Image 1 (cartoon, rainbow, N blue to C red):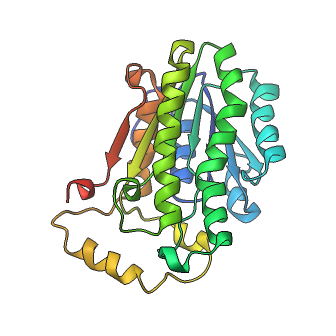
Image 2 (image 1 turned 45 degrees about the vertical axis):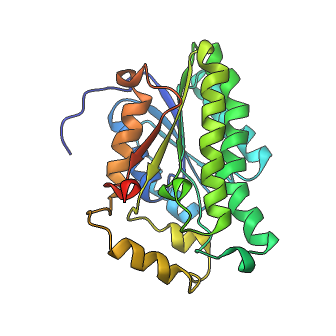
Length: 253
């Protein structure tokens, strides 16, 4: 690891999906840059990676439950009496199920985790951030938010996340709150594993589209973590309500 610059020294952050992939890399980078991090995941075995780690407080929680969200934010309030950054990274996809094969259960499961959970976390945490002069929120969207080649529940959730983020940026910018979206392209994570089940055969059509793209679009999770760091640091103080495509060029294809 290269020498760190302490860009988040003294700050307190909440990172969901902290046990794997983008969430794991973001916790690692934020703590190395001086932040105290509430690392949230729903799998105890994954979260155990953060046991006895300096500046990391692992919290086992299900972010689709309001009582768990309250407990997560309370952890920051009680331990540190402040909250400066939130990275809503936890998510699942809809395994490319098309509209006619998407039942209510699949729709609700994706919307609840990918859209409703960030909404609830922001609603609970923003008053705490405002009391300390503001802070930065990063919501992880998707290339799917601006294209129609994924299933409807995932596309709707990630498109909705953009609307939610822009509304927060407009409504609370005067209070020092910044809220931005990262739209990753394909990223080497296990989001499919956490989504449960096998991809729908329609997903083969997406694979064909991706293979035809003239770009090296696959990302590593640490590349997304670096953008989260930028958006949560003072280097991005004038960036609010932005949607950043971090996709190797997928969105222009």
